[in-house]
Length: 116
Image 1 (cartoon, rainbow, N blue to C red):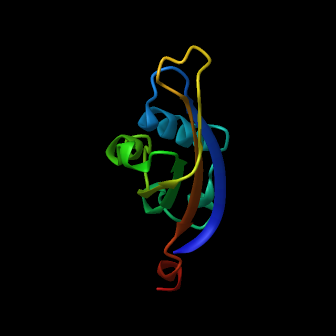
Image 2 (image 1 turned 180 degrees about the horizontal axis):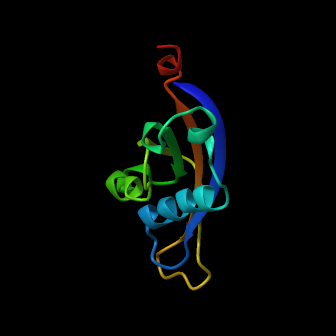
């Protein structure tokens, strides 16, 4: 894959302590703040887009990768969840921290196809 673009996002789960929700919101933040028209520039279909999704949260095992993948309307996405982000204790001490997820989307194509 030839990497062409990296976009960043941040998502939170303010009250529920939901790592998946924070990750999904981070992906949407990265996607919806940008218009990615790379496919047209290189003569590809949007379905050819390859997307590597790196998610950082304090409890990676609590992220439902299948839910994160549902955000992508096209392309071939791969999600990797790792240690990162922040858990911020809530002042009311209800046991659920505010969760912050950091997301990086790396977008590219299999450029070999152009040369065929």
